[in-house]
Image 1 (cartoon, protein in one colour):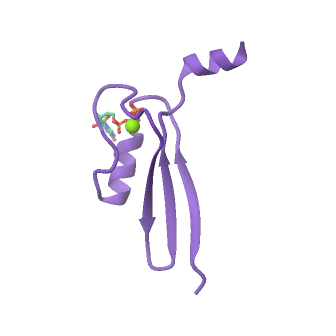
Image 2: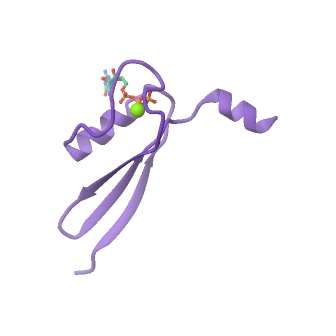
Length: 73
Ligand SMILES: Nc1nc2c(ncn2[C@@H]2O[C@H](COP(=O)(O)OP(=O)(O)OP(=O)(O)O)[C@@H](O)[C@H]2O)c(=O)[nH]1
Ligand SMILES: [Mg+2]
């Protein structure tokens, strides 16, 4: 069977559990989890591997209101 790869970006407001979700999917503590908003500052890549497919997850710093306002100016 042909192997398949897809990419998933975890995007959302700070402190909503993006890194927790990634760690639970991978069953590995890859990305730092704290109760402090904006803990993830850089793009973290984690690869879930199954028999016939791989999913590349991108844990992101998320979406910040300040940045959106900045881009509009
Ligand atoms: N009650 C509850 N708390 C959660 C859940 N998922 C994550 N948390 C908690 O929420 C806090 C933030 O979790 P993170 O995974 O660091 O959140 P994040 O979206 O990656 O945060 P940033 O990297 O700062 O944007 C931690 O204290 C987690 O333990 C959940 O499903 N339920
Ligand atoms: Mg995070």
